[in-house]
Amino acid sequence: MIEINLLPEELQVKSKKGSALKPDYAIYFIGLIFGLFICAHIYLGIVSVFKSYRLNSLNKRWQSLEPQRKIWESLKKEQELLSADAKYIQQLAKSRIIWSEKLNKISLDLPSGVWLWDLSINQKDFVLKGSAVSLQKQEMGLINKFMDNLKSDSTFFKDFSGLELSSVQRRTIADYDVVDFVLLGKLK
Image (cartoon, rainbow, N blue to C red; front, side):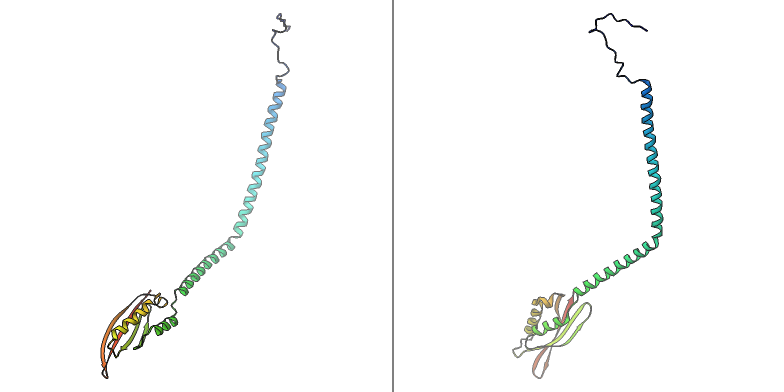
């Protein structure tokens, strides 16, 4: 159809025929986008198949390693038990009482006029029996001095929670007063 426009050229509305897409190209553009979606879907499907194949092969490999894993877990548990035992033994070795040092300290702290005649040790108690003789009648003073020496000696007393005089008996031997005593120590 012929169209006549009588308006001057500067007032005429210009048509934009060249910028609009023609319906032929729109179908191709929609087809191209649809094709890209199909290609992406196929690609992701193939990747998914390969990943599931890889997962299945890894699961089979994991199941084949199951006996070795059980052996490894049992060895690990055994190692943990041995490690716990080793720690316990080290703790016992650290808390071990070295009695030779203790006996040496008793000998060094023993005042003149006091002698020991019995020593017994069990898991909780340390029992030391002895006697004291003094020409100046200071037997109890000697026993107290001996106990104070032992208590003030840190290397001797570190393994004890307490040291006390549990019994004292006085007797006479050939005109000399002898005091028999029993020291009781509580081990930590």
